[in-house]
Amino acid sequence: MADATEPLLIKRYASRRLYNTETSDYVTLGDIAGLIRNGREVMVVDLKSGDDLTRQYLLQIIATHESRGEHVLPLSVLTDLVRSYSTRTQSVVPDFLAFSFEMLKQGQSKMIENMAAMNPMANMPGFEAMRTQQEAFMTAMTGGLGSQWPGPSHGTSDEEEDKSPSEELADIKRQLAELQSRLSRM
Image (cartoon, rainbow, N blue to C red; front, side, top):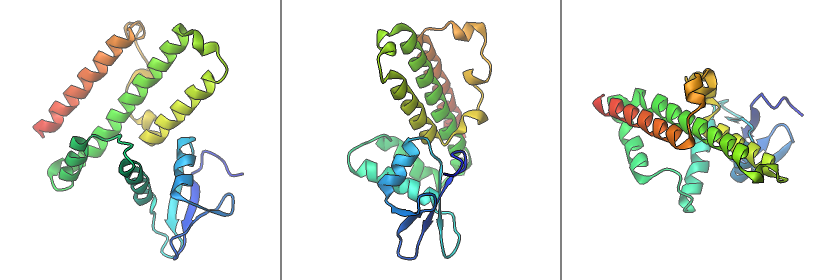
């Protein structure tokens, strides 16, 4: 089995079939989504041209979930994303989204840590597996961008460590509002 830190290479043949080079079998979009949910990075390339099609397939996975009614992105966010492709703010939108997802991931990790500390369910079988799966999901959702953004995971003060979950949530909301304000001024 290949190193799990290396992206799993998925080849797309001319017939548009997707081939997992690690297991030597054909896969579907659902299979790729499952791999990503389990924390695996993937890279989809066109066999003939060598073009990287990863972004296209990840967007297709998201579109499939959205079409099934599994709405993660509010309509207003989708509308603003479409608008960003035709404005000068296009250059800040990817950074803003990555930062927002990182804040969400950090907030969720803190909540899970706090829940484990105060929750008697934390000692129940399967709780640790659920927490690990949640972390893998957030890593997949944010593309593993945790090391690029400042935040609690990069050195926290004693004051930040003593905050209650509601105070942390208020801080996250405040930071998000500041980012939205900066973005709207641009």
